[in-house]
Length: 286
Image (cartoon, rainbow, N blue to C red):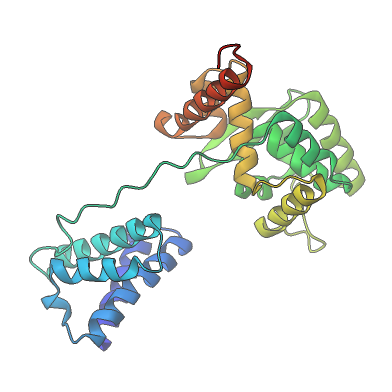
């Protein structure tokens, strides 16, 4: 077992240094691969003797407490681990090769109606927290992008906000006059300097993603919205409402910061679903 732990740490170092994975991703790999090695260790199976059927048996065992999505992630973690062992000349071939990833059923993201998003925003009494909701819906930015914003990222004259997305990729999102006015008021009342975080704690450090989640959950509760509303729900709502009002998919891709248009295609499915519902409700021959 000691050798397994050493190899696991070597694999995790490889992910950090060579692959540049985030700490959260490495933590997930540690959990997935570590649990598997613990299981095979208790079963008395040496690492070099692990076969395809051992992995299959473990995946079947974990089906009892994991979703299809989690099983797919677990298999991906194990495949990466064994590929590393092959790369490191520890094994000649990966026992995970040839194991098919379980098909994940397509789940359309939850979307709020125009009335619901308006109710969500209007239910928030705190001016700063209301601005956070306004800004999320006005831009479709990720919550991680929002908490990283500084005053210098807002161009009040031209009406843009600069966002740094995944891979530190820069993009610019237009802002309406209503949100710009709220941003001006907020920055003035808070006495923000250009280098100040737009939304900060008393320590001048940015507010946490967890705090934004709580703001959204509290607002949804006050508004009487029964749906599970998250920051990503507002992002989905932003994109869907743009598409419903005629925006081009490529424009939505740019605004969301998607590297691949395929990721943005999900909103065409949502729109078709909405169109079908509208047809069912309003067509005279149902």
